Image 1: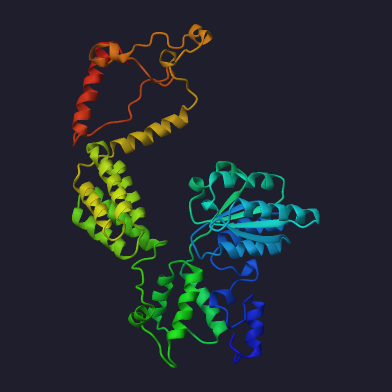
Image 2: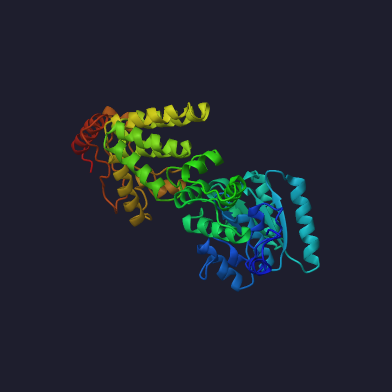
Length: 444
């Protein structure tokens, strides 16, 4: 807070949990002092939020906070420690090793003997290797620490199953427009002046923050520094001053999903020109190329399938080429894959067949396979008929026995129905041929 601000404003800001030390950066001065001050995570901190309910019992279990940067993970962890009267200890997986963990655990044990618990906050917890993650398990189980890990990566892929089984995952969302605007309003109160932006420029600044609360306040501070007395920036001036372009769409909101949907449907509709247009728009907006590469791989298996078996190989090769070349050179490989998919024969036969098979499997998941196709490694199993009557297909004419492989109680099912397009035309011929042989040989 500036020394020129009236005392009444200072009292207001203090009551709202806002720092008043002007030399500190704006994000630090606006750091919440209570959980109620946290903006943008109402699904976990609102009246019916997961953390709210947990705190009503005055107990806290180990947690993993998963979400993008600038969404309040560190702040919430610190405030949780205050709310539960736990000692707050913070380490970063980027800078810490086994010795640092041991030191933190020993300090927590000593603290526990005095009756004080420890909330151990581990930033970037996914960067610890498997062995390091395992070292948390004993101190979590015996209550030495309440672990709160923060990660920007999917915990299902990056964290040990044993660790995840002992912790609850809470998802932090990117801040939406209303949340960013609330931060700007709080910043204007603490600064005692409005942002020098017209309405369009203000909307552009919100988009520039890209759902990151810390980034939004840093940008606002840059705007105030750049503005001369009485100056108000329009959108074009704002982008020139900050030396960055506003995203064409918010990667966490509707624009993101609208464009990826348009790209997918253009590929499915065999329109390479429209597909390239939407791909280019997403690249231009700063979309993560690896996100696009993953979606392109999905298109290959969902919409092309076995009509062109090379489609999946082409898309995986495009992803590898991007990994090798980086931006912007590697983007051409993804564009090439998109054109390949758009011009390939289309089939969703495998996609449909897999869905039908999954549905049948859920309904009949306990049915045993027929005994003749089960191995019989023991005498008991042989006596029970395991493997009895099995016909080795390679010993049969055409390397095809025609025997039944479905559970007897289920009967033979048909899931995969390839169309007469692309390579699946050949697959259809094979299936029809085998079905004819199956009937000739008395099969189902």
